[in-house]
Image (tube, rainbow, N blue to C red):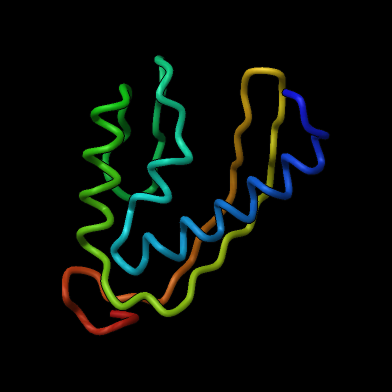
Length: 107
């Protein structure tokens, strides 16, 4: 990694916040772009199946995005952030106000 770890951390958290906002509006693409394409890549998601493998993750992210619409608020709380030479990860909580599967917001 060529940049300062704090710069990388801040830029990554900003990208993650934007990606989350887009996901609750039904657009998973910024979220997908944040994930490594180098195997093994895994998802331990709270909503949807746990997956391993790039193609499976992309299908899952698009499925999740297809369920959202009309998102008006997204929040992320990062509890743990790890940053190494070849791996970065976050562990935390997300919340949102959005329609899921066409239901009114908050239902």
